Image 1 (spheres, helix red, strand yellow):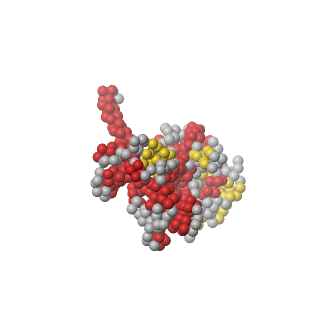
Image 2: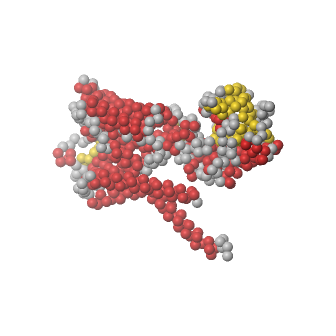
Image 3: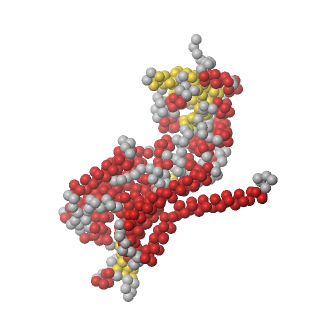
Length: 374
Length: 253
């Protein structure tokens, strides 16, 4: 009997088909697990935590996401290009302090408040861009590893922020700034008669004010706009394509005539600019500039990028992944608080998820690698 | 016929070492020239002077009849001299189309040129047509380069050079690390290039491959050219003797 005869070939075929199906399943799971995990978290907290599944809390989560997501946004590009930016946390603080100082001094000097805020924001984001330029130029032109350069610039930004602010919170901000940081696109008035207000805050007080939900606060709206821009740039433009190419094979990209050095500088400027936005929005939300605004959040932002499936070796990842990673972290944070669990548990859990995320990635590579070898 | 590339008395010294010594050779349209020699014979140095990586200390390079100074690899590429190195040419995480158009992406302009969006459909279609013309078979152009075989990758790198109007192709060890079937595919692709009028210089250690694909063989030994023969007028044994330094057609004595 030959091996080709149906009697012998059949069981083999079934076995190999089963293995193929298992492989396929693992591949699919490794791609969507973080969505599943997020869904489980939401369901779990909705059942266990009082007030988790409410309009108000959903907005709290979105507000909590803003700095982590913004810092993660530029970081996503940098890591896809096989770099890393450790400076975003203190760059965010620098931007917060600079914007607060400029807005306060201009407003005190009698400039129209709107204009003062605009110039302050430009100054804040601009100071961040300068830090990014420093990162990019040293990395691209002097060939110093990004880990070292951005660590160094992180300290420089930290020092600059403390020197400028004298180590204090820069207060004395106009009311309009606080409104920008806390008011919203939509308002939902609950109570006897539920009503939705667009772009207009209903004039209510007391108990009624407590029943008023802000939907899509301005910082969230601005962040969403930046996310959409980032998605467009990364996935639809030549710059985005080259970001992937640099992460995949820098040498080949250079040989193909892509100005890799210039793009590298731009990537670090971009990363700093999104951190800068996080800084000015912090200033608006808390009506004051703080040098330590981003310190505690930077590692969370890198965690969001990793949980979102961006490969630390470069070349792989999507903006939507980072959004998801930031959501997972924010849901964990607020959920644990609402369950009255020590909030510090979030760090333990985030740590475990980061390692799981990378394990998933490796498992997938292993499986794909094997599938190819066959 | 006028040669596409003509090298006259090219010399390259590194300190006291003369890596390439007064080498002259021509490459005509429609021919494959095999460049062979032992390690350190000067093959790579010679090629790097043509592709703009090194500057010669002496001698001239003529391309399509004009004397040229090639001071950078990008200048060589602008002339139409494409050098294909293994593993250095492609981004493994991008698909076939993205690699063929890497650095020269086709875009659509919107809002009066303010926003420029990648035109992946166009690039995929062009890539598909190109590969069909070159008789290269790749299951899906949406596949990432990492998932292709070594031979397919080599074919994509060659196809890219062809698409961007390569006038002369230089290939360094094109069959290294390839399976036997893939080696055959790459060699027949090289022959198809020649038939389309693109001359090819192939550097290889594998004499069998050189004989399989070349019209002419140039042998270097310690920086000198020692043989320049049509494949029909020589044999494996003879070429090996040239490589070992046992024969030299150009010794001045």
